[in-house]
Amino acid sequence: MSSTFWSCVAANYQKVVIRGYSQACGVGGAVDSNFVASYKAAKAAGVGKIDAYMFPCTGTQPTGVTCKSPSTQLSEFKAVISNNAMTLDRVWFDVEPTSGTCNAWNLGASANLALAQQWTSLLRSSGLKFGIYANGNQWTSMFATRSTDIGSDLPLWAVQDDFKPGVSTVTTFMGGWTTAFAKQYYLDTTACGGSVDLDSFTS
Image 1: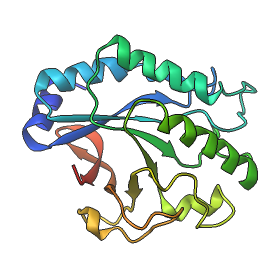
Image 2 (image 1 turned 45 degrees about the vertical axis):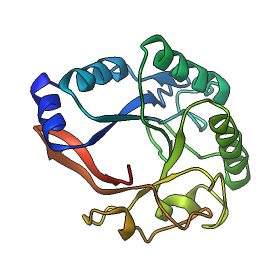
Image 3 (image 1 turned 60 degrees about the vertical axis):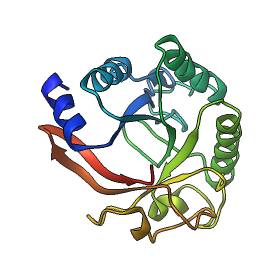
């Protein structure tokens, strides 16, 4: 993204969330190649609050490459944050199914639950302020029931693409959550000349 984009974001939005880690199923997960540059550009533009998210490698991959262990993926992510002295408000763990180029959460309900609980245990002890990004309407494609709890003690960033801003408008709860910390209400739109999703946050 250009400096003009980041200046516009800083002038019009209170927070940005940057992808810090991606599935990268050809290598079993990797720090996003744009993470550091995007963070530095956002800071230089004066963006008030910066979050990041992890979209880890979690499935059996068409590439035949095995995902790195959760601890390895998290360690790689934390190392970049530390080495670049990043000040992040919160970090989000993306839980959503994908298929095609890279697969996510395609291990079956029991194995998915075990893996998700392994991840959330690591997140709690990571030293970072983690939350969970997820869409309640996708939950049963990954876990046995809509009520399956992988870590409802962690803040929820709920995906509800209804074009209605405001955290209080979330209705698609799952996994033991009854309130949300944030809401993604408009996917795949444009702002400041770039492709973005729009969100509401508690803070």
